[in-house]
Image (cartoon, rainbow, N blue to C red; front, side, top):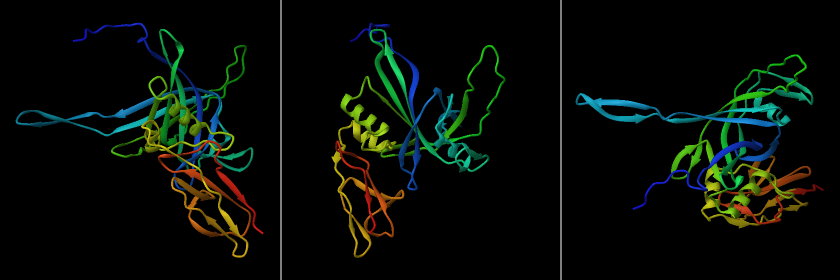
Length: 288
């Protein structure tokens, strides 16, 4: 038997801070393939709801509780936001610097990091990376106040609702959290490479199945093969490589594709795969 003990040295953990905010822009297929750094992030308030008991009665007694569906929402506060966020805040930009409000609001992905500390290592103990899917931002107040002898920067705030995405063998989810203090360091580094990008690979938000596969050791490294151009037929031949999808203008393509001008072909790994170090992720096909 083990006797319970409280406040053991090294077990006094806490969470604090928020940084490394990233906005992810979905492509036409719904994959979050383009990440943009979100500077000035000050607060992310996670606000789950639902999972409420709905009591059922039989035989003149409480028979059981049916639990309502759980929802995930958040409030994001920041001193600023990336220009790419305007399209998700109901703004249309006909020319740079000019915005038209009250437009349709698009969905986006989000990630941010919080510190995970303990009584021995302090804030250096670890961190958590939070991945949020299916986000939409509601209209929010913006209070522009006069400057005074105690100036303060305007802080923007958005209420974010979510639509869950599939998870194999589990209920759909809008939130995944990865704790560096408990997870394999190499897998954690690989996740950060995917989320934040490299000099060769664009940042992206992996779907839940890919994240789970990464930490369960079932991810396979792949190297994309360059497509080829046939000048006689004006076609690009897309190679067939297990674990790799090829895209043109955000659309997944396969087989030969007829082109009439210079075209960029982008490769991305499919779920359960990652690019091997140094692998190319796009090619400019020069039309002749």
